Image (cartoon, rainbow, N blue to C red; front, side, top):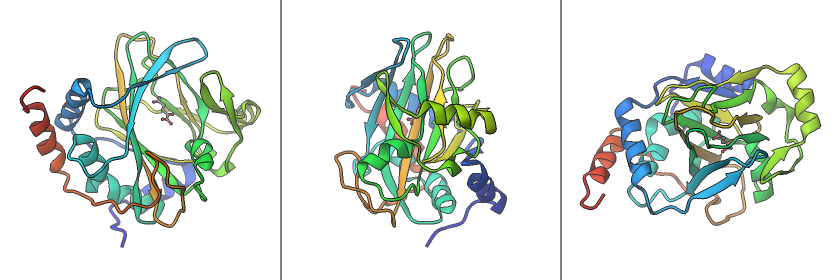
Length: 260
Ligand SMILES: O=C(O)CCC(=O)C(=O)O
């Protein structure tokens, strides 16, 4: 049973544009805890992804929702998951989460791609999947905010290939799409959330500013979409939702632990 917490116009907007911005879904205290936990976190292996100019973006991934953590509390929070279920019109489960870190003056760009361009190769049958980018730091043009092509999810899956150290969507298709679709810079304040469809073309510029740009992305699959069960990218695993209040409670517990 899907709890509908969205306005009908929000659903229409998501279906028409391939994304929906929800300002202030998380508050500053929640984002402060997430930033502090992330900065102090030694438990993840951090990957560096190189862009075409040699700049590096850092990220780490996880998919565990059973161990108590602020990441899990956010991924399982009603305010996020209920919206995701309303947008995808199905029960969802966590496919994985990732912390995207662009350091000041160093963080690299991301090439145009669809997330389903990657996930198709994981054996996911349908593109009935979506992500939510949560701005931990303010994201603006100069620090490399996310960019989307409005309505590009309706193009279907585009071929993806190697683009430097990354996987990118076919450049000719992207050029053609750019002639017809609006390019939107998703400038966001901390706690704003951008829900976007797995076929929405997106990218971001390098961070040439003095400001860090951290973003936390929670990716979901729908229960009725078979996916191969891969390490870190699971097939259907029921998601136990939690109260929104757990985010601050877990955040506070983590940052006050001895040795944190
Ligand atoms: O963090 C970014 O700027 C881009 C992230 C992204 O495109 C992705 O994780 O699919």
